Amino acid sequence: MVAGLEVSGASVSYGATLAVDDVSLTVSPGEVVALLGPSGSGKSTLLRAVAGLEPLTSGTVSWDGEDLVGVKVHKRGFGLVFQDGQLFPTMTVERNIAYGLSALPKATRRQRVAELLDLVGLAGYGSRRPTELSGGQAQRVALARSLAPSPRALLLDEPLSALDTGLRRRLSDDLSRILRATGTTALYVTHDHQEAFTVADRVAVLDHGRLLQLDGPEALRHAPATREVAAFLGATAFLTQAQAEALGWTGTLAVGEMLGVLPSSLVLDAHGAQLVVTDQGYTPEDVAVGVRLPDGQRAVVSSPERVESATVGVRLVGGAVVPA
Ligand SMILES: Nc1ncnc2c1ncn2[C@@H]1O[C@H](COP(=O)(O)OP(=O)(O)OP(=O)(O)O)[C@@H](O)[C@H]1O
Image (tube, rainbow, N blue to C red; front, side, top):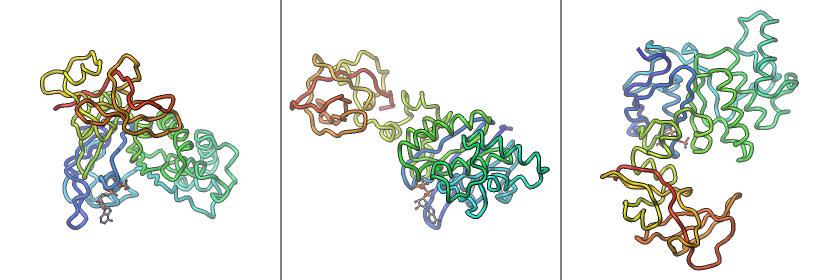
């Protein structure tokens, strides 16, 4: 028996669309697993199936070995957080958080609400209405409300995606801290790589309803299971040992392996291989310089400034090892 959440051979169809295709995964107690994938990859459908909001076409969802198929949403013991926290607009923040705590004596309830407000950094906001909160504050309240009844697991569907980028980064750090401080078991849907890698212990990469890989951030970065996963994580080119060495790489590939070139794999080096600059784009931190590799593939190197010449010297210092 596997403790925690176990999804086994789960499929969900909408008519002819197979939205989730034979997915199996486990989330151990206290673990946070992110479901990451492009739009339409089946992340939300899988989460909704775990929540009981979507029926499985086949497979099972269980908790501590107890089959949950047929168990109603509110009987599953999971907390849910959605993109728009769906707070009750006429209730104060305090009453929103206390919503699932009606069984507790009043004093205990108050104490629990105060604890949660403190946990999400909103002590003193209890008497406000949701309309008097910023988007980020509202999502913090939604999180506090879901955590209040101490659910056995939290299911979060793009909880930060309605927020602007800066706030999303800060809140994903906070979320990660809060989930760990409370030892919460969580399944977390996002299409944002950075958010997934910040919040989760392990990341499940989905595409076309299939689970491509489920691993820790380190393993995903350095050893993606397939070229498909590497490309999704940002690899733009795949090199043989000889091609990598020609760019200054000093590592060794085993037979049947290739090196995926990520944006962090190349550095500027005046004495390195001279490559044609194909395009340049500003990011808030740097200039992403597109270069043409000798075999015609495109890669990206980070530069502090715009490159004014037609070619630039680069050296390959790393990459993701993938099966050829
Ligand atoms: N209620 C529905 N009826 C019919 N098809 C649906 C329904 N919900 C989702 N789908 C289809 O199922 C597939 C998976 O959708 P899902 O919303 O799970 O993807 P997602 O990875 O969460 O995407 P996004 O990041 O855009 O929210 C898509 O092809 C989608 O069009």
